[in-house]
Image (cartoon, rainbow, N blue to C red; front, side, top):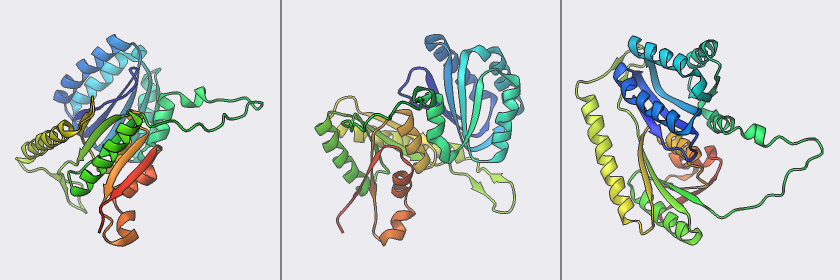
Length: 283
């Protein structure tokens, strides 16, 4: 399936591709992509592969045909993945298009965004130029990563205080991981008949919870998104896409440094390019 990742820039479109892509997935996704091309002109794409299992045959054909027909409608395509076969597929795709395509491993997500935004070209300096002095700016966009726990509630309260103080935008994001059962020694995925229905119920329940949380925030234009994926990668990806300059998250922190270092909060703290505030409840 495809899921759109909201992006702050008009000329960049980002989405996650998970599971095995079907013809039905493309029938929903390609019209959306065509609309964006007509509205904004040539696009740059970020394609984030998470638990990606490839394409059904007809879907692969749809993908190739669309790429050939719209070769001039894309500026750059960054593919963020997890393994070598995805990198190999990216190299193969370069043979059939004039569009610049680059593969980035998951821990290179920020480099992928820099490449799409052409930050490397914008920041080129001659040998005579010196870097500008550091100028700390007020926070403009604050993101709260929530799992609906008491610790997340505390993080939201702190984020609201900061958003009011800095007159900043506030966004809420919640991540849901797909329920896939896999044997450790066999390349076989067991999908119960009711799995997709259960996932849809989970997703809709999370959307309702997050919408309710957003309504209680006494700030204008609070954005909220429920996205598929692991909490750490989803929060970092959303923060990059939305040019967030502060992430606020909660942490249990009940069992010392080892517990904290293995937590989602720690992963966000060490992986984010922007500031991160970790809020812990008193013991």
